[in-house]
Structures are given as structure tokens and as C-alpha cells.
Length: 218
Image (cartoon, rainbow, N blue to C red; front, side, top):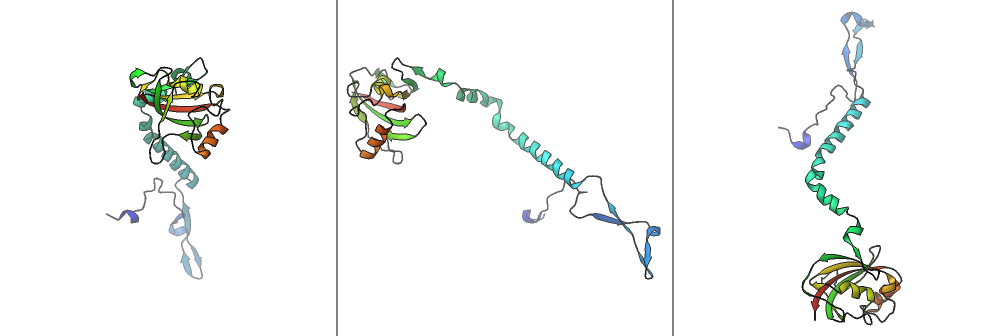
């Protein structure tokens, strides 16, 4: 068997070759020049043009590709795809303060109540997904949890509403409108470093997305 690199692909239309094929006519159709008999040649055609052959090969390739992709969208995956397309209005609930939140993970133990001292990690993003700040380093994974009382005088009102009712180990994702967000620069949580602090406050007048994980109710 010839090596793979020397194997020539099979032509599904063998009669369409790059160069025309010729055959000799009958002997009586030959002509004479200078005392020599010169056979007459005639071009042979099988009736399939090269353009038509290429077109049909393209159709066959497209059909084969379509057939090979059917397994990627099997009927068994349809419920999962439908769940991914579920509208946000079904997955999120809106609080009286205007905060929209989603329970990602249900925690365990007693629920956090207003006035409790809590410890949590968070990631803050703009509504378009742009990263603003996080207590968890996105490269090393090292975290610096925040410990705050659930009090609207110290914590932004919208985040307080998100954490109230959570259990230790629970996670929530919320969209906090600016009127219950950083209405005062003294409100927590806010990064101590100048750069992240400035970045966060520069977006204080727009909705912010918080992903919160409650670690402890102290």
C-alpha cells in the first residue's frame, strides 16, 4: 500500500481531467503530408463539464458536513438549550428598592438579618460586564473578605438588601441601581487602593452588578 503522502485522491468524476483526452479516428479519416500518413485526432468528451463536476463535488461536501453535525444538536440536548434561553424575568426577582437579584447557590444555616455582622466576598462589574473590583484576586485566587454590619448607614443600601436573607455559603448575583448604590463616597464596600477606588467611584452613577458569596454570619 502506498504511503499516505503519495496516495492520490480518487476523482468522483474521472472523465473530467485537467487536459483533454484524444483518440484516433478510423484509418480512412487520416491525411497525408509529404508522403507520410498522419492520423487524425478527435477530442473525447463524456458529457460532464468541469464546472458541473466542481459544483456537484461542492454539493456533496456540504451534504457530508451537514450530516456530521447532526449529533451536535441531538434531541437529548434540547431541554438544556431551552433552559439557557430562559428569559431573565423568570430567573430574577425584583425587590422594592429596585434591586434585581438571582439566587445562584443556596447556603446553609441561619439567614442573615439586618444589623448582623457578616463576612463576604464580592465581584463588582458594570452592567455591560466590564470588571470594576473584586475581593478575590482573579490570577492567584487569594481573597480578602469584607466584614461589615448590615446597616444602610455603613453599607450601600442595595447590597444590604441583597445580603439580607442569605445563608452562609450562599451566592447571589444582583443588579443594583445607582439610587441605592454609592450615593456617598463613605459607604462600603470600597477598595482601599487609590486606583480601584477611583475606578469604582467613577461608575457610581450607573447600575452595577454584584456577585456576592456570604462566608459567615458573625
